[in-house]
Length: 73
Image 1 (cartoon, rainbow, N blue to C red):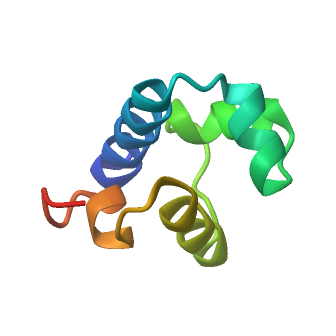
Image 2: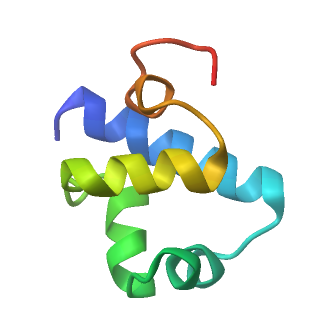
């Protein structure tokens, strides 16, 4: 696994848990299957670029933050 995917997965999980959402709730909000969302959190799959923007919007953070390029959301 590449480091960026690991950081992305960790940040997706952290942001989701901060909001008290389940993986299923997050997946439904953005039109994904919950198993697909799980793969992104566990760094088992690399999301397409467009989906990174959707994640950023959902959580109100920058794509740079999601990818670990900065520590400020």
